[in-house]
Length: 305
Figure 1: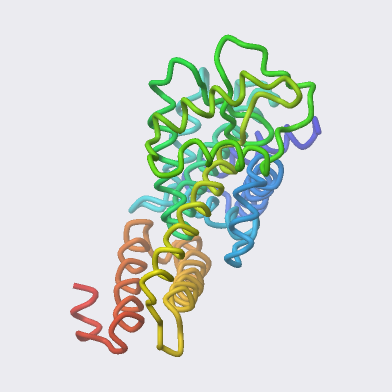
Figure 2: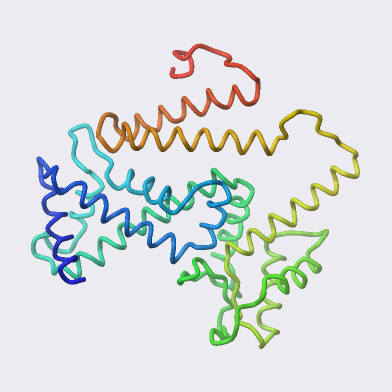
């Protein structure tokens, strides 16, 4: 590990130089991708399960993350890496290799978490909204807190023993006891109040809930309620493809487009990050019109404009 950390320090020094060392770039990209992928696998496993159900792997997430880390400015410099180097307490060459490793790892994790937020919003917009609402309300909570450990983001009660040596609270038990008390009059503050009571009143299991599992619990609950409502209204979808089928197909196409833009144009430096975003947005509009209207509504030039 020590030799690897020395190598990382040397790689960073060579790559942030102007002009950068092309031969070391591929090795540093691989190093960054490995750190990001390991983080997704070990610290965001719950979110990763959702991604896999939509055909997105930890490697896909890591590649998207690396594309942001190695973004270039108009002069071809890796401005994120330069900013990282300039944020260190002393020049990069003077910092011990172990400290460089820890700092670079934290740097990669920051981009990885940003990638989680973006992907969550793309593949699960309903879940992402619930996730955001819960986090916003937890910031002002006097009874619950949000922590970050090997399970990801975890909700715990404040000022009580969290019983971390006990078995995890079964999600089935949480679902049954939580939903029966909020059904019909759901608000986020009420949900958190009920959740706090459930956690502190029991002593058999850990007094904690993985945020992502709570989000999926609520999302599935709302989906069931909507389905029951639609069934009661006897609504029938007669199209060959359901709305869900079209949404899944649209996501797969857009994901393939994004990966192609990153691998073929962005990382090789053929376009800037802003240009990549513009190209992706243009093609998303184009694909969206095909899915929603069955045809293009304008010329390619008009879409790009």
